[in-house]
Length: 376
Ligand code: SF4
Ligand code: SF4
Image (tube, rainbow, N blue to C red; front, side, top):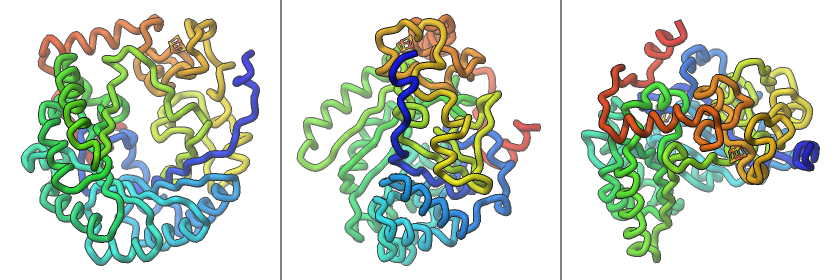
């Protein structure tokens, strides 16, 4: 067993508070679980419970706190949670679609000590932004961008990139520049949850990726003095497993709306693994002692090609959710890796995209009705 398989973990550095799955948008690539509708509003952690989680995670050493969802602004107590996170000394971050961020609410969040707002767009055109989210939110997002600037927050924009919007990359960057963004994350979709369901519609062609990267590089040189551009390449095309979440139970502690604690926001799909809940255990126990957080820490759990691979400390075998979705085994080598026995599945998906094959299933929008239909 290697050293990293037995070394005790450090504290969580990032607390990701998924305060609700409620969201007015219906994005086709949403990373919320397919069965998100099982978590009703009444199941969500109360304000008191969240305040306790914030305190316990901070006492353990967490320094960054991201408020996410769903749309975190759907919670009326967000100001209170952020004020407490600020008081505790976290660097606080709001990940939002912009819906609900009125001027009044933004001012209240600023006063509560919110450090950073990350605003997501679906596209640079009203038509596609509104189609992909199944809402009329493009204009509102523009206004929210102006509000963020006017309150002196750094302007951080995020756009999930996929086949349907990747050819707009030039316009997307131009829009971010016009809005005064200091950071733009062009994150190629990861194919879990709703994006996995819709993968045959969303996976870009290899040529689209090449073009988008070249255009991003040109812009990077042009706007170097005012905007940082991050192009997160898709692992399907790169053939390189990612060190998912910077290592299982290594940096990130995600708490879902009902209090389930996860090493990554999609890990609940993995079979044969019980994840602890903050209603039953404190954060220290969850992080250090629970089966859910220890199962895939380090490298000792690996099998197949990963066991003897010289890169195993670098990528920790890739993503467990992807291994489960594509190989049917969460402990398998991530199939995006060319050494995986199941790599052919990934190659076939990319080949189908490159050949322009028309998907058989219609696009599914993320909404409670679709969620309930899918879980039966
Ligand atoms: S991806 Fe879209 S639907 Fe999902 S939580 Fe974010 S804004 Fe809402
Ligand atoms: S075999 Fe395993 S450790 Fe090696 S590169 Fe592939 S996923 Fe990473």
